[in-house]
Length: 298
Image (cartoon, rainbow, N blue to C red; front, side, top):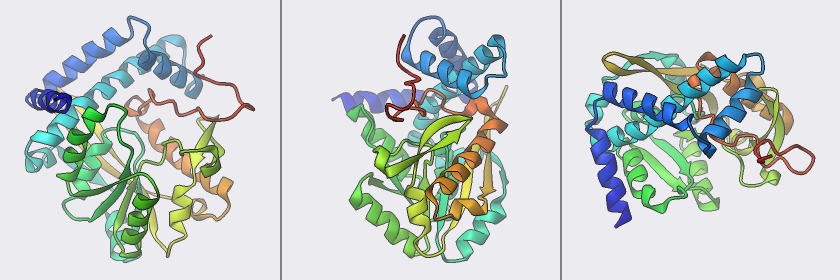
């Protein structure tokens, strides 16, 4: 029953024009910053540690803008679930670095596309699904009622989704060996400390996944970064797809060298438009007793 209610809510959101969604999300952002809540608190903590050179007013402005973009993700999920995919693709007005993706796919060695929680990463699948076979893992949402809508929104774009775990990983390996594209959110925390390594991210220690390093050793896949940058305007939202090359250190067999390169690549993209990063995610947790718990309430 709850799943039907959630699906109905996303259907309603899909009918909201993007320019109205922007206004709604700006109002939501203002509301979230007016009282104590975990989303506002974590966003503020993360931005404060990532951008210590900004004064309090600048940090507060970045927090508000970040929460606006966080809200837009909810509307965009409704659009991707219920609106015409062809019409949505028309909102993609530019693709930067497309030749990198075309060359990587043409190699036949497989492609690992790293898509941080930046901009509308869901639109990346919309762009990719037209020309490429996409394989990806997913973590079931904490609210089980959200899962059917999220899965259908992603699957109708052409993505093959597998639950995170050994079975899902086997599907990724199979796709890579067949020269297909793997889409990975590289700034998620690994499931345990043993499956990651501590490496700096915005000069903060961050537990960083080693899954990409493991996959990069299967054959000779090409690794790229990708993001869908939003441009908000009076007519709504337009998107620019950005494809970036990875540096040589990302292919390193040394875990720390690899992790440092990975986080540096993500950070470079985030710094270009930091308001579109998901700062509400507790990126700097699971560090162990040797580090301060950034998110513990005082």
